[in-house]
Image (cartoon, rainbow over all chains, first blue to last red; front, top):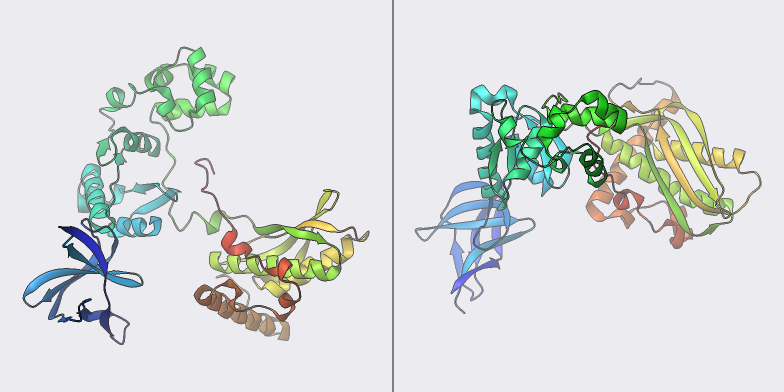
Length: 82
Length: 333
């Protein structure tokens, strides 16, 4: 078990000013995780998975998770089960 | 990465000088100390933010002059702050070997060694006039450095770059010798477009165009001419460049390489507006070329080009603007 960097498809809404808000994450097994709330947004590095960009701190099903926008892709720190 | 690192520095809008694009920057935080605390505190905050935001470590030197700050940044690596203050510099800096000092390389080290100078302290205590006699002006400069007397200010990042640029030029050695005027025209177009586009990036206008021709016997010469009004329009540069070619390259020997340089630069925010038709025409052309810049930024250099460029791909396939490397300016620049 380790942490791996996983690029994920994300649905995003754009405001009139061009500000992005991720709405949901599509997982590889077909599940869709709705993002309940964006708690924080800042420039930050992923020290576990390696990578840096705009980091969104989001709440998904009651859990706080990080989601990075590493232009032009999105990634999460995923648990590698191998 | 360098750009993002600079953003991290902007936490308090200090004066920043990019000493080397990739790994070294100098910040003047004199005015921020009341707000953020002393140099060490600011340095630690910058290191913390660089690590949090970019995931890389940084070593920082804090001092009252750039030379000792650089020296300090080299002392503890890869993730530490070193303070060289007026109180401790004799213990910290003077103990170090002379070659740690900026601008003491292999050769200078040997010369200093001949005087029995091994450490920065030895250098600082040495007779400056003797250094000047043997090493020239640089010897005296090194003595100033070693004594912490360097008072060069930290330049503003925005002031480095455009304002000290004296000319903007591109040159190319053609893939084959340029036999006809048509070949020369194509090459000049490519070069002028690159030069004009770079001038727009820097926000400067040129009043003089200079061309360099080198023929197939490697004989080269330069010619220049003034422009009717300062411009950053590639067409105007081209008109001047091709005129210089026609007027000067009379023997018609095939050319191996060509360079175009725009000099007599001025900032583009003091422009004499014009009511004349040519003036309006030029403003229109400038707008057009800015649009082309934007298109190329988005879709790549080859996405939009003059029809004439299609006549010979081998000559016009190059993109001097993106291929052009500007090296960091020297400390003495």
